Length: 164
Image (cartoon, rainbow, N blue to C red; front, side, top):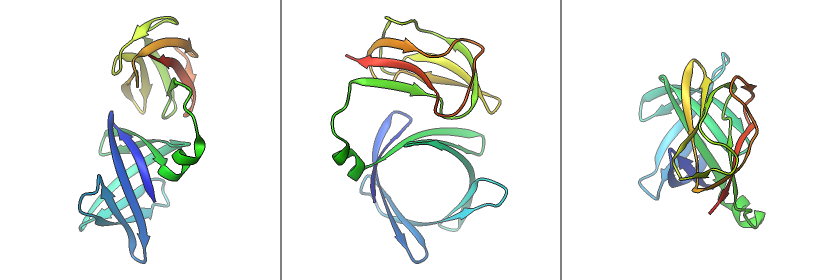
């Protein structure tokens, strides 16, 4: 399968092919490498790549994944290219969504504000870490669905932005 992945604001093409020993993975058409994924009974997963192991925990909602490994949080949006080609038209509205459960600490925007791509809009505490959620596009804030102090679940819509 081929996926369009956004990781830390960078877009990548990820190819994943299942084989009899695990998976072959290629990122941006570079040399493919083999990996094994072990589902741990205690929760989370272990990846085995070239003889090295990496433990991680994952929370997901639709195409959005929050991956925690070695104290680092990675927010990944992965969309199967087949799904993109079938799904049709984009609305021009972008959402900032809670990637995991947490508490809203600060909100830096109001409805009607003009924001720039990458501008910090919300600080959310999750897993004892403060995470700054940034605007995925430049545009106008059309809705804010939370307030400071709210506790939210993974997948909760936080802020809506109409792209300009």
